Every structure is written in structure tokens, then in C-alpha cells.
Length: 92
Image: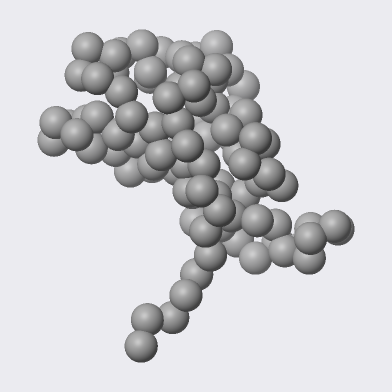
């Protein structure tokens, strides 16, 4: 979950939702790609639909830009991912 940290240039650190999709045979490669990539996303839980046949993974991250958000992923994973800037809203 994104925290409301102050960023020197933007005020608050932007929050992005990263969505990655892959095919069923690629699951092992996707998870193995993280072993060679130093990322704060390693060793932390996130949401995935692989166990249910969907083969998508989502991360909520803080980053200055979309490119910086995607750089948190190994290149193989990032090439099949999108990062969308998001923020909290109150639903009436």
C-alpha cells in the first residue's frame, strides 16, 4: 500500500498500480526473473491470479514516474507490464 510520503518536488510521492500479465507456461520464468534483480518488491506479498488461471500480478508502489515504477521489476516482467498512477478516493 502506498504511504503518504513527502516528495521534495511533487509534495507527495506518486502511487502507481503495476499490472503484469503472462501466459501459464511463463509463470516460472516470471518468478525466477526476480532472483537476479535487486528490487524492494522481492520477499513481499502482492496480489496474483496465477493460482486461479488468470496469470496476472499486481503491485502498488511509490515512484516518481511511470518509468521508475516499472524499473522496480526485472526487464522480462516490466516488458509485459503497465504502470498506472492511482490515488485514494472516498466512495459515497
